[in-house]
Image (cartoon, rainbow over all chains, first blue to last red; front, side, top):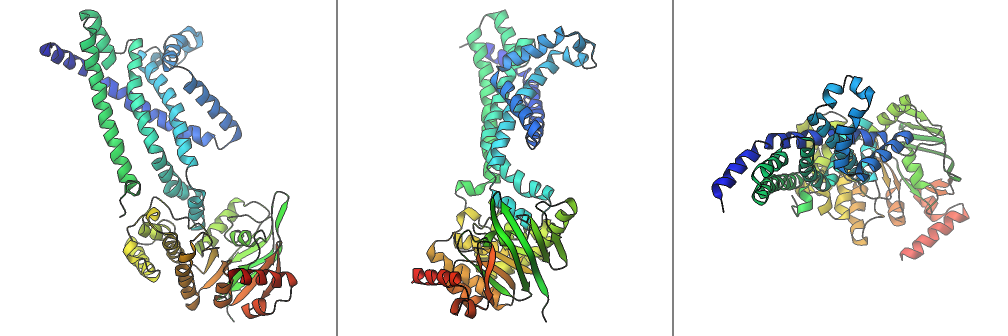
Length: 228
Length: 255
């Protein structure tokens, strides 16, 4: 094993780590906000049709194609090139982030919907009957219970998004996978380089899994055999 | 003369084609303990749920203390505020307890005092502990609802209702979801509240309990008050044949 080479490669790949984390965190934040809006839309009939269609399209097509459609596709429309958003939409970073946000929103809105559906009707009634306002019931009863219900599934989504950031390397972004691909094409040592890249993702996944598990225990100790 | 705590006038409620309440009048004065009895489908739970507007009546008037709502099937914005004020003066105990699963016993009891009535935390906690002592659950203050028996959960729910300082407490079949051996502990707590002179309306299938504890018994049949009187009258010498048959069937079944 060529330890000095591996160390050198690892150092180079870690240069891309900030961008990988940047894309993962921002797409989760943006996607989460959009997911909450999609669930509020579901309260009206028209909004519900829109939300369902949105989820159908973004969950039913490959993320890679969504990235290509936004990066290559939008530029082919004249009005997009004339618009105030063009300075953003011609940058691969913003196109990649936009695709990740839109894709994450579809999955997260479904996870959140499941959590909201799992809130017991009786718990909501108990809140109303104690004299709480709608906003207080939402804040003190519905969202805390929904979040606890949704957390395990959301943990998977966080890891998915982390790995999904690798796809934006196809539109020239130099995050961890992008750097790996560039190194492979200059050194032809694919196995070592991609193994190093995989190890970075694996380490991040481990941290995320642990963090989500800790959060679950902290929020819902009663699901882990703690009686007090 | 005691004052009126809850007044219900000409109350009507339908679910689709099914008219569940067909013009109910009922008044609870301070200190009354009213048991609502009747066959399933007679409308007694719906009637109880109409008082805090958990079900919105189609017609009629509900008055709680100073606040009054004349309903027409839905609540406008002003009426929703009125309903919230009415709820603050009522305690409601559900058949299925409906404790908040993500909060401990103590947190369940102090939730409304803190987040509805905006009382100071220390005061709310002190009072909650006194209420937990009353229902015999002081040592469970930090337990989670899922780890309690049904009887314990229902006693917490009663403490939670009392923490609101309610003018009246409404019980919706408080022992129907309990294993038979746990019914007694809950009835004992409710009985002690009656002895304190609290105003209560209790929907129940526990006929012996209704007869012993209530100051008044109301028998509902198909959405109408069919019999209304002291427990001695209603259980001993009912005027209506249907009431007689209902009570007869219950007492023979329970023996």
